[in-house]
Length: 208
Image (tube, rainbow, N blue to C red; front, side, top):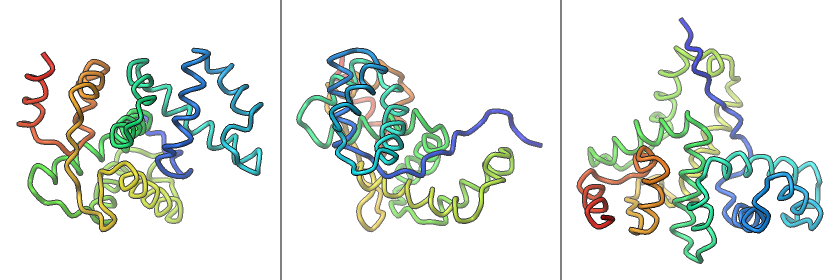
């Protein structure tokens, strides 16, 4: 029996796209209009790819993510703090792709809470297979696509600072400023990070 609660699985392009995302967010902050933002990005060749097709593909991917963020979080991307930018962009990915968000919450954070810090390919495939039993869009993916998606997810995790280069889960504790914006947007956002319940409660107290 399949579930109609569809997973978008189009995350086969690139990684975190930190620099590109900040460039696009700055244009959006100026115009507050996504159509105008796209026009300016292409007009000024802001992403500086040699191929128009690549620019279109990367822009489309980044826009999907950024549109999931609140105005407060997009504004905070302008701050010159790479670690906090990484947190915000990781959350944007989790919000844009529910499959990744659930993997972050149900596998990565749960392993972190159990002090089991090594994330491996088997963790991803076990999660994938458990979802494929109920989601036809997963069941129909080729082995090559599944492998590519797994590689992209692990790359995103490393570039976001959630995983080390050897796939060790790293604790992520945002600043009070970032935490407040994340929590205000949606309290569920904080569960996309490897963070303990005790640290969440401490952040909540300090945010008041």
